[in-house]
Length: 281
Image (cartoon, one colour):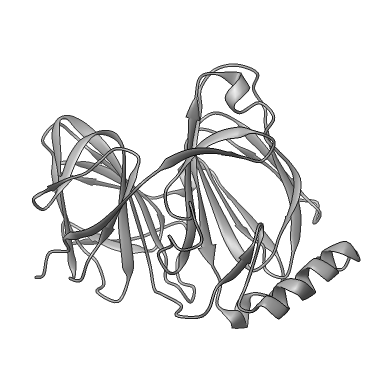
């Protein structure tokens, strides 16, 4: 057993996206700050409607996937394929932009807390132009694993928790993503096997916790080094921590706003396709 130590910390910075939604961005705050295969991780959370009410009006994507995890609140997704989905407390929207999608994500509340995360997951070159797709995952679709120190929700991937194997609501794929929301009770602990070929990070968003001998910082992507095992321990108030891991793609990444391809020429073609109405054709 080789414990994975934290090798890099990436504190989130405050910024805005969409039509002015206030967010905190760690991975992806610049194009040099990524963790293959992950392009971006945004945290949003506010009780002030002005921070989120303008939402994300209709906009395009190509070449990657987005995973939106709603902790609290209500957003409506609509896209050019005719998909329409309500994202509410504990739900997940897993969208594959593929060759192209045009969609919107708009708040369905005028007051109260809106809180969650959006993760951008890259696609390898061979999959960037596959058909767009969309999945709505309700809270009851997401497996939960109870353990002696707390519980976890397994959105994607496979994990062995105290000698029992669990498979998430999404599994497989070329990058074999693992996405878990770990809830630790006061002074709770968990040890998880984690395949050594996966790049991995932790993101503390509530409470206090440490990984090995290192205390996690709030709203910070803590990138894990080599090894095959993860250890987490909560402080006296407990903790909530995201575990995000995936198999690196190892290909060039060229990004222009909402488009992610492998070469400058592919980006130029994408812009022509969007201008000419052929992005989603």
